[in-house]
Structure formats: structure tokens, C-alpha cells
Image (cartoon, rainbow, N blue to C red; front, side, top):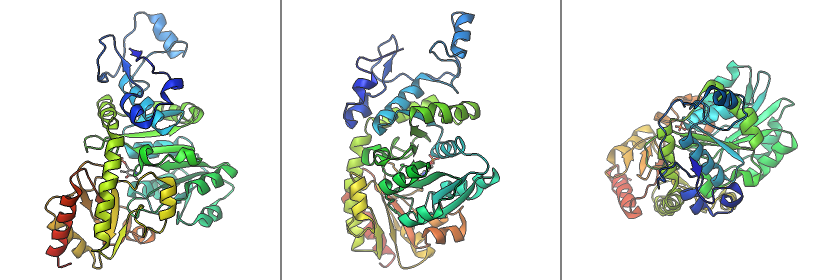
Length: 402
Ligand SMILES: *Cc1c(COP(=O)(O)O)cnc(C)c1O
């Protein structure tokens, strides 16, 4: 295995994102394969015992065991780090493995976390249910309210944890303000950037310390594998996250890492096209349903902030009808092209009712606190012709009398 010509950080970090997405992190075996090799191996063999000793002692580079290193996974980590503009990255088995690892690797009993109240259901569960079991307390706040972040800080606050845009309320958080507030207080910011990805938004450019991903979403982009990643400084990744990861094992499978490497090659193309499509669909829906939330619609409460932080609005929007669950389910059941599915970031248009799916588990009180009503639907706009998606929504709305 060797790096391909030009694969040195001093060169690759100057490549533009579309180039990094196709070529970043590529190593080649002595076969000279064009596409990245898939190393489906759990272990490695050695020419002699001294080599094993040197590798375990950290005196010699090289693979020892796939929970510690795998060439396919390393290619993915280098590619994601380059795209993020981060010093280092570690891939994880899923988005939730990434969030859990990013938090638990740095928190101890007695610490306090401030988190956005509107979040992916399992991210809320970590703060509300998992961390308290280990003596880590949490305060959840309205993430759009900058003063609420400041007011929630305690002497033992160690981490700020939030998404922007948030799932499924599409709240946009003021990255620059929140990250600089955190820095002033020695607090580490952990940003879940799944909706935007590095192609649309680079939280580190606004001062974020750690950026965590569900790579299941836009990075794979074709609904095939679960995957995750955590990006940060060399110090954070190697000295804080890696000891936790190597000993607890939330690692991504090499096959899944290879699929995401392939997905990343088209990330730039897909996310800009899907954002264009989503804006068209959002504009149509705005004239047709009581409320649409999409960061690049002028009606979004944080539209100016979204434009400052993001290059495009992303593939996801949410909408609200006037009725309750029956009407929302009725719309889903009337769809003919868009699939009923709780996944996002896929090249297919997918729609779900968060209150009875992704956000069922957090319970009715937390849903009310987050602003996830029975009348809310979430739509991932895919790569189909947007007019076909609009036609489908139009006929489904007509079918339920709207
Ligand atoms: C999907 C998602 C997750 C969880 O990712 P998995 O890959 O499903 O484990 C976390 N955060 C956000 C914002 C998500 O959309």
C-alpha cells in the first residue's frame, strides 16, 4: 500500500472540495487499482515477531488489528477530514456511534452538558437518559436563543451539543456566536452536521471544536449503509477519542467504509442538485400548506443566518398541516412517487411523520418541548425531476381534500 502521487496533506488540503471528494485519501496497493481497495480483514500477519513488538510499541507504522486500523477505513477518514478542513477524523459504525463516542470519550461523572432541545430523537435520548446514568447532567434549551446558551452555563459545563439545521424542526443555530461563547468558557462544542454536510456548511470555520456525522445520510447518499464519523483536532482525535474508540469498538465495517468512499465522490454534485430541487418543492408547498420550514426560504425565521452559514439549504424540509395525525398519515398514504420512509439524505424522495416514527421514542412531552407536532411531516427531496415530486405532492394533497 502506498499513497498515490500527490497524496500529501500539504498538497491535498489545497484541492477544491469536488477534487478532494473524488481523490482525497486514496492509497493504492502494488496492483495499482483505480478504485479504492476493500480490505475485508479483521487481522494482519507479520514477517517476524520483532515487527509485531515494534508495531504494538508504536515504534513502527503498520496495521495490527481492524479495531485499531484498517486501510479502507483510513482512506475514508482522510477523505472526510480533508472535506471538513479538520486535522483528523475517525469513522464510526453509525451516526449514533459517532455522537455517543464524541460525548462519552470526553465526559466524566460530575460534568454538565448544554444541548439543543430540538434534535434527532436518539441525540435527545443520549442527553436525557444515557448521560445521567453516568452522573453527567444536561440542560436542554431553545438553540435559537443565544442568551439561553449563556444562561445555561455552569462551572462544570464541559460540552455544548447541537445540530444545525435541526431534525426535523429545521432550526438554524448561530454557529459563530455559540462557538465563541463556548471558547470563552473553555467548553467544547460538538456539532452534529448531518443535514448540511461539509459541502454546505463548515462548523469549524465558525469555531466549532468537534463535528460529528451520520454518514448514513448525505455522505452515502444512496440509502445503503449505516456509517458515522467524528472530526476534530489531532489532539482531540488521537488523545481523547482514540483511546475510547480502540477500547470500546464502535468501529465501522470496512465494506461500509468503502461504500461511503464511493458515495463521497458524488457528494458535491448530489447535495447541490438536491438543494435546488428542495427549494423548488419548498416554494411549491409554501403556497399550498399552512407552514413550510426550509432554511433557504425567505420565510424561515433564521433565513439570514442560514444564508451566512450554508452554501445551500440542503435536501430536507418540514411542513405542517392544520389537522392532526390522521391528516398527516392520510397525506403519506396518498403518495404515489415519494416513498414513506424515515431515512434522509437519500437520492430518492422520502417522507415521514416524525411524531410517529423518528421522534416517537422521546415521548409526547419532549416532542411538545421540541416543537414536533402531530401535524408535522418531514420530506427528503431526492434526485428525481422536482416537477414529478411536486406533482405527487399536489395529487396527494388533493386526494385528502387540501
Ligand atoms: C440520522 C441522524 C443521526 C443518527 O445517525 P445513524 O447513522 O442513523 O445512527 C444523528 N443525527 C442526525 C441529525 C441524524 O439525522
